[in-house]
View (cartoon, rainbow, N blue to C red):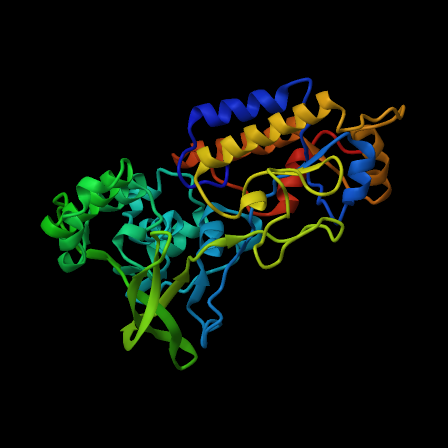
Length: 410
């Protein structure tokens, strides 16, 4: 929640707070599974362990020039402006006028929105001050969002697209030719997908909602696969694309197939946004490196009493509601296994966190509990209030820990 540039919904905040404050729940932060405590140690202390740590790495193209200056992971960029410590020092070069985002999901649109939004709008959000400072100097005025397939295969949702079409001072540049044939298929497209396609068609064919003082541009480009990042003086200067044809498969889906025709698109800034992937956190956890998930059957991992949920279970697909439903299913599965006896409950006198506590102490690990986390939360909100925004996020772990442990040093 605190690492989202958009103000989180109150019901999400309330649900998290209510759960964390329950007598039946113990929030334990600043502990790295696989490093500070091993999975086998958790399984010895708890009746069941559920792994739901998401996807913290991103997919790559593996093409020439991908490591050039000016080519960034969209994930790292989002973490930079949202204040995640791991990428708070990214310092992206925003001196180019044209940026290209490779991928057409919600993250791609979020990156475009941050690059093109008026500063007075961003200043009212909890985007970090270090990001605002750099964005004030940004020279980016044109953003292209590229996809391998066509308009019917985009992954972003209507909410994110609508936000882009309403950006003040921005003009959407869509090629009407990409949408003329699609209009004839609108009646056969199910809702809510139909609403998304209708909005794209409207934006392409009539320019969308009128915006005053347009001085920035953004557009969607389709049927393009990057094959090489071009360079000049060690920096990215453009991208070479192969133009694709869409080939229908036996299951009704469409696959992008290269035509042998190539074109270059000049640019000085690139964001790779082609999907996240999970990574193994503990060598004792089964992991499918190719798929980027923990092998499981409906959430059950082969190991007894071990479960997984969310992106580490299914891969990086869906939105928050998708992940919530997945979590509910996994929770119900654990309850079923407890009732049926598939999970053998611990009879040890010391179990749960009390069994883990001594291990952490012996390893010099100082956990952060929910009351301590709320200290950090309150400081961030106070700093934000002083700046006229929801919060100012703390980007250094040592500073967070100093606040958490203040008046509680041992």
